[in-house]
Image 1 (cartoon, rainbow, N blue to C red):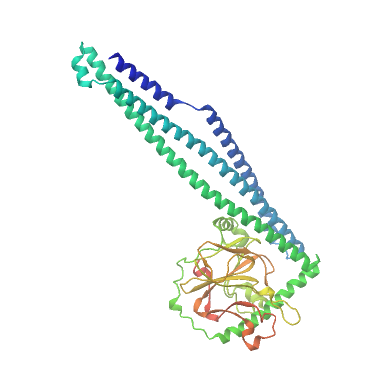
Image 2 (image 1 turned 135 degrees about the vertical axis):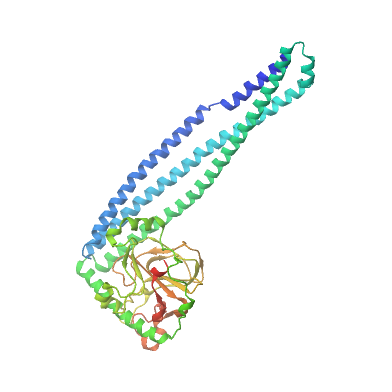
Length: 452
């Protein structure tokens, strides 16, 4: 009986040693890592406050007269805002790496606990098997007194309870281990996303700087030259609209409206990140709407009052105010029908074709095409398959744009073609004759808000 009791006591001591070890060194390391994560969080909060301040300045600039200085100031502030966002993303990446380290320490501790617990149980059961040959019932019968019999039964019950608890502890540790490993996987996935964001943000800064340098080069840093450039763009746009109207009348494409998706179903997504759209909602007072829309579809007050820009036919898309370099996403999965850069086309006098600038059109297979124009960068190619939310380029102000925005159009596929205006004899020799672009019959232009 004493032998059985000593084995049980040894088992309890060994098990307690393995389960109760605080591992102070590892705890200190985990505490240091958490402190660094908290410090990063404080820095992120401060940087986000800086971004909000930059945005407030940008909104104020947007209400002022369109001058060269305001355009340069806008680009400079955008670059500062983007650079601050890069710092935020870098801090988030550092925090994600620290979190992986912290979880790795926790996983290591749990794996060691599991191994130690398994070894302790195995060792004690082996010792019991080797040293205890007499079954419990035989021990009870052979006990000299009733008290000895009760002790034997009680020790057996305690041993079984301890083993049961130890097994439960093992299961709990294994469950916690699985949770930690899932957290590591999720953190690694977010780390990849953050690294992709960082790449885009750095490209955005480059796009903004390039636009600023191009503007200074075109204007020679003179206000008079800037206003002249705007006037040239407006005149070129008037010419382009006339050419386009002539071409539209010759297309003779039939659009079966009954084959189009039903309006109001939200079949398209906004071509931006959720954070961008959230920021727009927060700035509703600036734009008068929660979507950063600066120009609506159709014969709006602006398009009616400015026939030199839209030729009095109304606006065939929506314009959304976006800082240069904003990632533009596919509103729905589909195939890239075409891409182009109309700024590369000139007439014999060297006058540039100011129209869509850099553009992408996607056909979605449901009767709709979407157009994204005035881009600074194009990330896709004709024939490429894209998914909903995939980045297809960066916003800009190429083409006839006098400020950074996205011209987002929705077309009926049946009434749309990708072609050059010069494919019609009447348009040869014009500044846009060699510019490849989407053209459509009048009834193929659809209101994007009907499908967003």
